[in-house]
Amino acid sequence: MYRFSFHALLGILAVAFAGVFAGAGRAAELRVATFQSDATPPLGHPNYTLKPLATVEHPLLAKGIVLEDGDRRYVLCAVDWCVLSNSSHLMFRRKIAEAAETEVSRTAVQTVHVHTAPIFDGAVLEILKDVKDPPRYFDPEVFADIVDRAARAVKQACKRLEPFDSIGTGQAKVEKVASSRRIPVGDGKFRWRMSSTKGRPELRELPEGYIDPYLKTVTFAREERPLVRLHYYATHPQSFYGDARASYDFAGMAREALQKKEGVFQVYFTGCAGDVAAGKYNDRSPRARDELAGRLLAGMEASIAATRFVAAERPEWRTVPVLLPTRTDPGHTRADYFAKVADTKTKPMMRVWYARRMAFGERGKTPIDLSSLRIGRVFILHLPGEPMVEYQLFAQRSKPDHFVAVAGYGEGCTSYICTEQAFSEGGYEPRASAVAPASEKILKGAIRRLLGSE
Image (cartoon, rainbow, N blue to C red):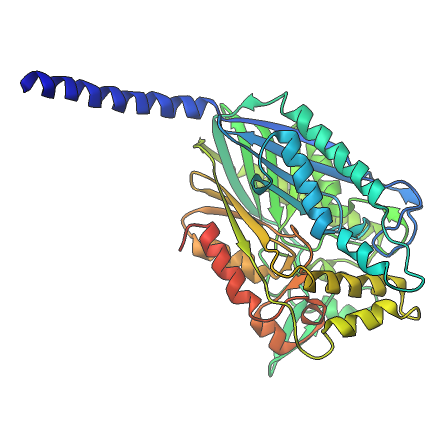
């Protein structure tokens, strides 16, 4: 009996030590690699306004990282496009998942949401086939080639995976960039301020309003030597647009300037910026764009200076599928949308806009994937559409003792995701939303699940 107990004890100790060494091995197996590809369409292809692309001021880039924990790989990607939706967004995720030899559910593709770049929704092409004289839309073969470029970059990155053992977090306030697009003026009313205040000094004088002023930075490092930095900040990243340029605008300008200056790969994700833009500080001039880029760069550098490192733990990835309800109020039925799509007197850009609303309604029971990456006390959330900044602040309030970075602009089929209060107030964002007011409760519930708060 005693011999059995002694050997049993040895077995327990062996299992315990094996677990310790296995855990140490897993920590040593944490690896990361960066990737970048050109996501610029050829000249002549429709841009945000459907104008044929005439010049490339800045190349549009797809930038991201591949993480490996010894057993699984995860891919985070930010694309310098305006919107990717439905089959187009899924194709991007599927191709880079195949390249990384992982599952689609372990990939997150977000757009930076610059407006000097294309919008593409593969489902729109099918809708436009049913109308007379459809507007010219993006060529799916060109898009497939752009996605293939990103997939090749991811595949090459997997050959360059290198160990990381620490993760750094920092944040800093960004001065004079973000401002709310919805400014309360009393009696339940508000003023609406978009991405610029050119010729509207009275709007420039209004306060910044409800924003998240902090830029957050997550750094993957080996012995505190940075390998890659991910930045998160909530504002529409646009200065002047509407012409036939391709540009990564002031957010990309700051990102690339920092990468050149520091010699460290930089990725930028736009947060929940559905009701946040640079309007208070932007008059649509090149000078204003340079100033916005400079202030955002200063915020990035301050966030890096504030960065503190801890030992990296094994990543935890969580995916939460959601079904957000479509609108049913007057003017938002499929018939209403199709009438606008079929009307050749409607502006081409708006015909596509209404087709995108139809495409969301026709998703049916196809859920939208939300995901989170957790490494120790660090959470990175990937949300769809154009969520209002309240969702980002809600996520941070839900885990006040953790570092929570939020990226919006994943699956773009929803367009704006507003709060119920915003729907009751009215204004542009609720009018442009494809989802019903009940979406707030659903999305906040999904955020809690992503954070492990439920």
